[in-house]
Length: 134
Image (cartoon, rainbow, N blue to C red; front, side, top):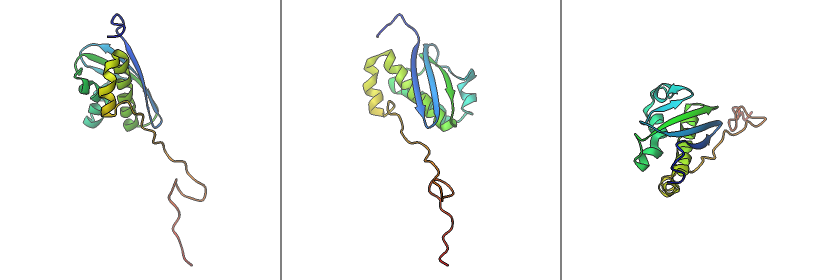
């Protein structure tokens, strides 16, 4: 391990307009998001919870680290994905050997998709008004 005397590992994740600052602390596998239990904050949605913890499960470290998260912006989907990226980056900081398995699973890739801007003359980004021939 790099810096085995240090016990806190940081990672920042972003997705759409949400930004998550993630800390990994040795513990029992609890997840705390914005000072609330992770299950409560993510509204007990199993997909969001497993997505946020997926990098730990890939490395077999589920019950070894507590996840402490400050997240801002966006909705629950963007926040859950930004937490996933932050956890993966913190695990790379914990041990550089973790990088390859996380990279092959795609956990270190930032999703570049953003909301498309509304264009003038259209109702939404691509939705046009109803076409009338006459």
